[in-house]
Length: 81
Image 1: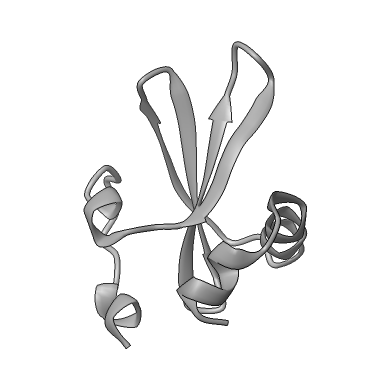
Image 2 (image 1 turned 90 degrees about the vertical axis):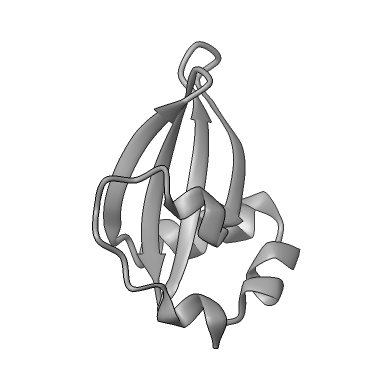
């Protein structure tokens, strides 16, 4: 699935895909939100979680710029295919 196809899905559909193929890579905190990075079929996906409200605010494919927030070495080649 391409980034565009993934981003067109509903939040519920995205959550189903990510949690079925759970491959957690890293997490970080950014402006009071916890962002968890997952690798799903070669696509990096971010889940933005608001702990104070106990809710997921967004699930989106990760941009190359956002990947710099994480402390792990990532293979970025799949982002440019």
